[in-house]
Structure formats: structure tokens, C-alpha cells
Amino acid sequence: MGQLDVLASAFREGGLRPALAVHRLLRRRSLRYAIAAAPIEASIPIEDVCTELTRLGDEVARLGIGPACRVAMRRWEIDPVVVVHPRVWDLMEESPFLAFGNHVTGLEAAVFSSLAARPDLYHLAGTFVATASPGLASVLLTLDNAADDAPAAGRPLRERMLRAVEEAIWPRPADGGGPRRNLATLRRAADLISGGAGVHMFPAGVMHPGSPWQPGLGWLVRRLRSEPAGDVPSVVPLVYGMSDAHLAASALFRRRPWIRALARAVVELSGPMSLYAPAPVRVDRLGIGPHSTSGEVTATLHDLWRSAHAEAARAIPRWRRAPAVLGMR
Image (cartoon, rainbow, N blue to C red; front, side, top):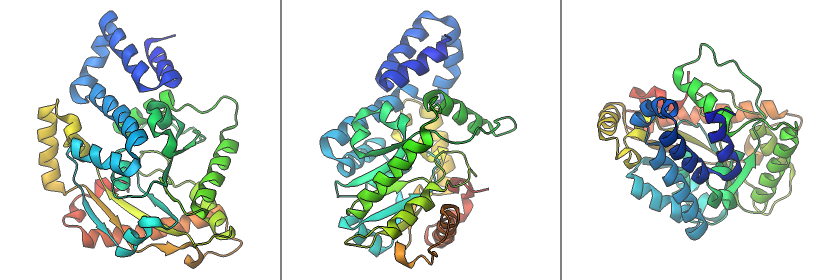
């Protein structure tokens, strides 16, 4: 077993804490590993980011999802511009909803959760998130990696790196049961929403710009339309204006001051970290036919998100100067 395999195995078996311990051990004992890790650690504060993720999980378990994310955002010195329709604020108080949006940096879920005061907010996320920080397990509805293999050759370096990390920490189940378990998770999400909870998800499932939205979103909305509920759930498209520069400009990079300074300069030119949410739409008012497929419903919701994206361009200053943050091609 190679050194990276040992590291990935430690993560899959115990999460970030044992993986960090193995990383430190390999760095001390293997010159080859230390040399390979040095340029990555020079630009990315791996240990700081991992420590903060485990700390966030501990705080979620102790404080709840909303308060914990607000504490973390202050600690990370993240203060996004938030432009949210008044009915979304009302919805987030206690009504059932399904929120969905683009996924670029990994900060999106924390930003959204920081707006919530309710305890019944859940996130659809890969199984690796619960593995990384077990304290988050109570607010996660976990999904196996059931995506089709896609060639990485010819893709941008960032995407190739993300795919390599994804394959190491979120491998496709060898038993072939991923789709079955994922369907059960979507049923659980529908039951929670029908019972009055809020659920947040990323329809693409990955942080690869331009990745297609998966039909699971449409399946979930079709399920919500068919299930009786006291309050009719609503969908909320979320447009996240975030980029790698916004991440690097945060206090997560405080021990990489030159990178943080450069990132702040980029953010000053391109525009602030942002979250935009238009008026929510009840699932029974989406104009979806009774025989619409999950793929067709997902396409309808993607169109709804694109309309929100166009509104965000008008509502948030300098948005048009930062198209890369939208994850669009």
C-alpha cells in the first residue's frame, strides 16, 4: 500500500483527526512524502482547514447548526453580502423547504446555515463529510458516490485535483449498492421536509464547474408534490457568489499571509462573497405535470436557478465582474 493509500485509508476509517496524525508521521519519516507535500502545504493550510472542520463539527454537536456556523463565520472572518427575499426569511423560521444552489468552494453550506435559527435544518452531502467530522452527522443526510466515471485528462488543473481527492476520500462503493442507499436517503429527506423541516442540497453533487445537475433533485421535488403535508413545502434557489479567492481571503489562510493578501486584492477587484435568494416557490406552483420525469423536473428547477442568477447580477454590486464564482461555463 502506498503512502497516499495509507493516508486515505486512515481518513475513511476514522476521519480527519487520524488522517492528520498519519500525515504528520509520514512527513517526519518519509523524505519523499515531505518533498511532495511541501509545495501543497506552502499554498494551502491543510492542517488549519482540517482542524477548523473538525472544530465546526464539535460546535454543531454542542450548539446546533445555525449558532455553530455563525460562530465559525466570525472566527473565519467571513462576512458575505446576503440579499434574500423577505419571504425566504419567513420560510426559514419554521416552514418546510428545499433549498438548492451552486457549489464552488465548500463554504456554501456554512454560509446558508449561519442564517438559520431553527434546529431542523439538514444537508444532503457525501458520506465523506460525516466521516471527516462526525459531529456534523446529526445534520447530514449522506449520499454515496454513485456518479459515472468521467475522464480527467484535458480538464483544468483545479478540477483534476478535486477529482483525485474525491476518488481518495469518497470512493464508489464496491458493493454496487450506492444508488439504492441514495434513494433511501432522498426518501428520508422528503419525509423530513413533509414533516416541516428544511433541507439544503447541491444538485451537481460536486465542486466541478459546469457539472450537470443530477436527477435526484427532480425526484425529491416530485416526491414532495405527491406526499400529503400540513404545510405545502417550497423550493428556494440559492445563487452563491463565491470563489477560491474568497476562501483564501478568509482567516482560514491567516498563516499564509502572502496568499491571503493576494486573494484579498482579487476579491477587491472581482466583488464580495455573496448569497442571493429570490422569492420561494411552492412545489404545487412549479408548473410541473403529473407525468414529468425526474430529469425534466430537475431541468425546470435549473431554469428557476438561472433566473435567480440573472436577478443576482442586478441585485449585488459588481456581480457581472465576477462570472467565475457562479460555476457557469
